[in-house]
Amino acid sequence: MRLMFYREVNNTRIELVKGDITLQEDVEAIVNAANAELMPGGGVAGAIHRAAGPELADECRNLAPIAPGEAVITEGYKLPNSFVIHCLGPVYGVDKPEEELLANCYRRAIQLARENKIKSIAFPAISTGVFGYPKLEAAKVAFKAVLDELALSKEINLIRFVLFEERDLDIFQKVFED
Image (cartoon, rainbow, N blue to C red; front, side):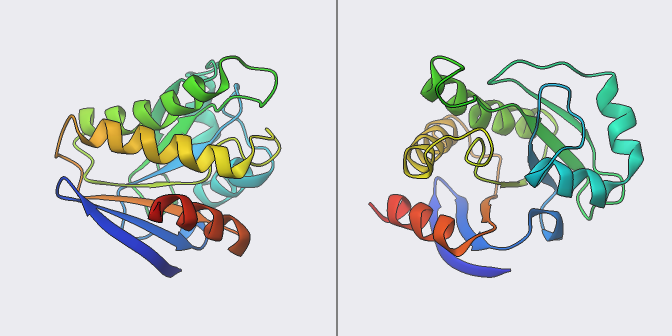
């Protein structure tokens, strides 16, 4: 993991790092860019399910399906995190209104963290992989939603955006610095 940028907002540290979301040992919850059935797939969902073990899929079966913009929480199983918050982001150009649905993912994940007394959470770039959401626009939506939600409470100490690729990190950092 490589810390690229951070800032403090309402007593919460927001970080941008390049790394693997399944290796965030110092956060209580990681966010899964899930599919509607909450099952293993490619990208982030596949990596999280592989690292957590089959028990995660077993628990997810009882919670699915979820709709775009919704989120649910499970245990972390073999992950170094106590919890996984599963968010279904919008498929760009299909699920409308995309911006609102994507913002709801970030908002609802933070709300679930607060409800479960979670103090630290790591996000991937939700919907920017196979769901096709343009990365620059997704970063803008993500930061605005996180900042809006943090204005409502101060219970979360750390929010980390974990970007797998250098190019994604550059895009998120540019938006975050503006």
